[in-house]
Length: 232
Length: 319
Image (cartoon, rainbow over all chains, first blue to last red; front, side, top):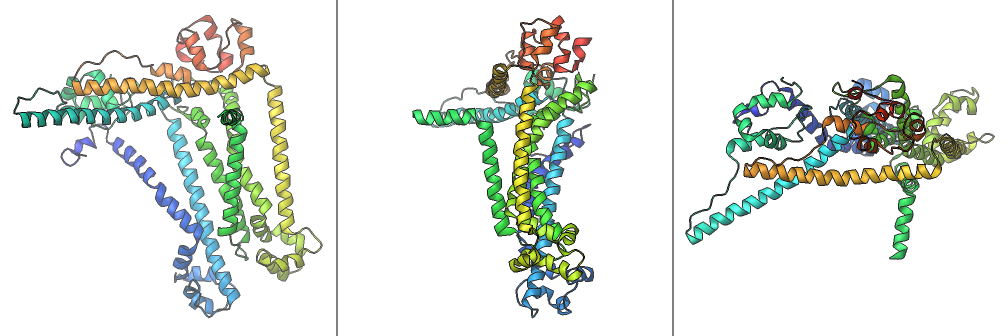
């Protein structure tokens, strides 16, 4: 959000790679459903059977129609629809072969995906700068902070709109309600990255501990501090 | 209500066995579905790859899932390779402690894959398909009778009469599969019993103390989650209020990274060693217990000599 107006938001100075790291995580999470679809479709076999029976590649045809009649080469694409003139036993065997290829491919996809996911998660976990229990606490904190933010947004939105409507209808002067400034919102919306020297669990936590004034003056210096490179 | 309480208590007391049973039943049900709805042996030279992939690939995936869902795996791995780790791992103790945690994790993760393989073997479809394409079975049934016998063997999973004809004097593939399945189940059960007995025999603590230690570990995990949520809620409330009201934050204690590292170390309960080196009254049931009892991990004679217990060298204490 807001990256068109200020591209420095996604590529902050000295921390360009963080965007790709976060984008990679999002992509991997998004790939779960398509990979499941692909593996279930391959295990089912009908899509692959239909697709590959129409493939005109001579090498592939040779592999499938090996030790079958000559008609196999011309009528393979009709086998999937049961409309070929081949004898039943031969067309049944061809269908079974195609289905077997599809299912073996499906298992390969499932096993490869599972293994890669486990290895990447293990590597990420191993390289973690945060200990196991602190990581658990961090996750709990992230969840509760989100809930608290939603609640406080509701509360302040209610207060502000009540005040505005009251003043409008009763023609009174509005009482002051303090809300964060534009820059404070910008600072709070930055992507968070853990810093081992500071005990901060989120951007808002960091802002609150180090003072909002400091953030708006020092802007990008804080971002350098917040990442792996630590300035003295 | 009383009856319900009794049932719940029973479930909580035997949750490990019930957990394993549930996993086994679910695996058996999925195997049945796969076998009847999805599996169709091609009855040609691809039999062995097809049959083996249905037998072994799901078992492998179940093993990986078993590792992923076990929290001990992540406890073992988190931060091990990190350059920022403040705790140095000594190579000898490292290996022993790793094995002591890794082996039970592997055993738990192996329940589902072994159930899959055992049920699949009892069902016989997958083995029959795979074995009919293997050269070993070809030698066993055909005894170099030429390619006719080999071609017939490949068609056996699709034709029951052919199966009876080929295996008239020998164990059919169906029977072989079920025998291997029964043998696998029996050997797993025996192996589990023997390893549990040996582990208990070599346990450095008495039965009741071990039981107390197991209950304490579970309780500490549950309470950690509750306390972490409470603490995180208070911290989040403070931060969001300060953000909106632009006020200075009230002081709020959060444990430092070093403290977290100290309590996250893998722990093996062995009061016997501590008894020899140190104050015999002190027995720590977890790293958290030790941390809190030894004045938040600050140097004491007892703490420095607790190396054999944890088998890790704490850099900050040694300096």
